[in-house]
Length: 129
Image 1 (cartoon, rainbow, N blue to C red):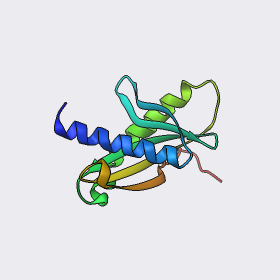
Image 2: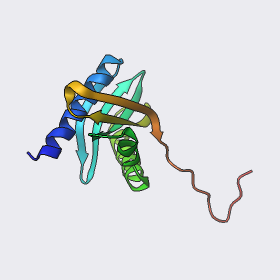
Image 3: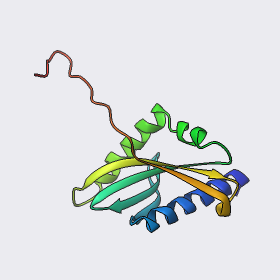
Image 4: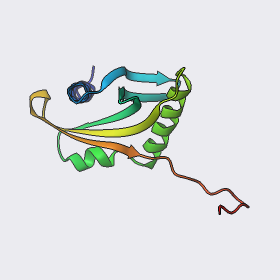
């Protein structure tokens, strides 16, 4: 496994531990469906939480900015696909966790709940009153 992949996995492990310590239940790690992938699927207070983890050796801003509009769209599609596979309906949100540092013993975590929200699109030819 390449060094950057090992580093990213360490960040995901630290993020999963952080979530567990904060009362989340980890349902899935690296959930995949076709080309869709989510780092961590967790649950807390009957809410499904899709978590994108970005691990960097510097600057938490660079980690969080890595979740651009394209990645946000991808995460929303993945969340929809995951929820459709469930037999019960819960609320769903997409969080981003930035993990910054030089290793598991020196990581800082920045958790942004509900970081990705789907955009509401206007319906052409119809006014909303």
